[in-house]
Every structure is written in C-alpha cells, then in structure tokens.
Image (cartoon, rainbow, N blue to C red; front, side):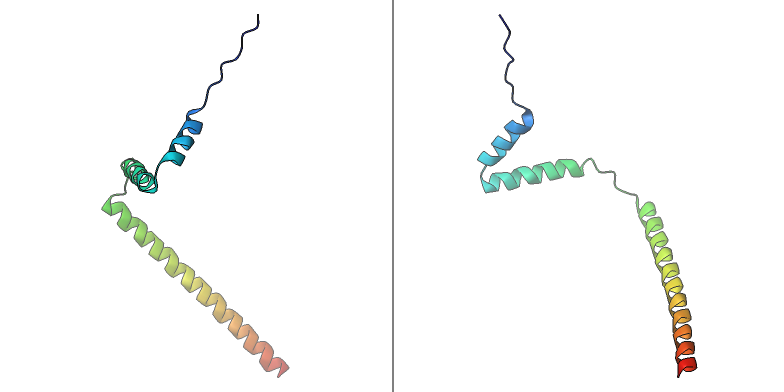
Length: 87
C-alpha cells in the first residue's frame, strides 16, 4: 500500500485565518504590541552619531547649493551673452 502524504497547514495560513477572525480593536492592539516589540530590537544612534550625521548632511546640502548656484550663474551669463549677440 502507498503511504498518503499528510496534509499540513503552514503557520502563515493559520495566522491569516486568525487575523481575519479578530475584531478591529483586537487587530489594533495586536499591531501595537508587535510594533513595540520590533522597536525594542532597533539599535538607536547615540547623540554623538546623530550630531555627526546631521552636520554631514548640512555640509552636503550647502556644497550642493553652492554648486547649483554656480551652474545657474554660468547659464545666466551664457543666455545674456547669446541675447546680446542676437539682439
């Protein structure tokens, strides 16, 4: 006789069925508990790391602003020169 394969359900399927059965407040409560447990796993940056990252971001933004301003000035001079030649 051939052995029949046992039918098993995955835990994901069971969890989806359980979630469907929960009422809205219970779903929210479950989401809140899961969110809190995930936030405990996060490695938060130290104040020094936050300060260093903020300074680096500000420096990059300032340099980018100067570069864009420079290209804008050059383009403006070129457009003025073309208009004065064609004028």
